[in-house]
Amino acid sequence: MISTQELNKIKKIKGEVRGTTFKNDFACVKKEGGKKQLEAVKKRLRELGCKEKDIIQDNTKVFSWYPLWCHVLFFVILNKELGWTEKDIFNIGYHGSRVSLIAKTFPKLMFDLKKAFNKSGIYWKKNFSVGKLELEELDLKNNYGILNLKDFNVHPLECYTIKGYLVGVLDLLGQIKDVKVKETKCVHRGDDHHQFKLTWK
Image: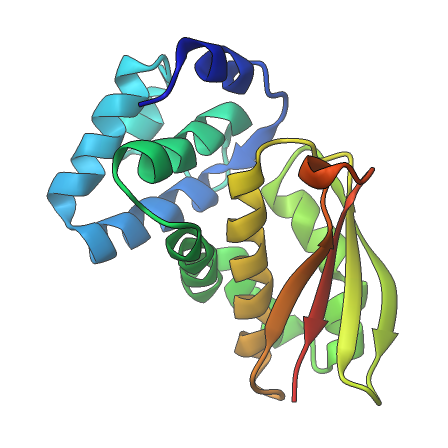
């Protein structure tokens, strides 16, 4: 169960997230866990203080902004109360990349990896009102890219869904295979920002 102390900490999280993120994540829970489990998540969100009617009544507007803390609470409920693992949460992020309106336009606009990495910060801002995603290094010869995510001290579970999303978006480009991601730095391990290293073949 989620303690009062943890819940109060979650509710203090600042920032907002686009409705498309909730819609995609809810769709994944329904697909993998069934409608009954999705309704259980919404019920707990409501009981724990998420009063956003659009979210708990499945009427989320794709381009509207919603509290980021409700998004974090969604993952905490899945993990602590419904038994979803970190790998499951990674897969939610991956699933989001397959159905997101933003992600679907991404490969259509980006014709090569260099453009995709260079534009990653723009697409971050379309999903989150806080945080800054920046390209640190891109080595096409050795098949890796490094992204830094700054000013995003939210919750460890968000790291897993972000990793899944990054892998999924690169998979959508269709030019590479065997995409993997490693979080080489993390604010929840004492670093001052997150860093994701993506590799491929």
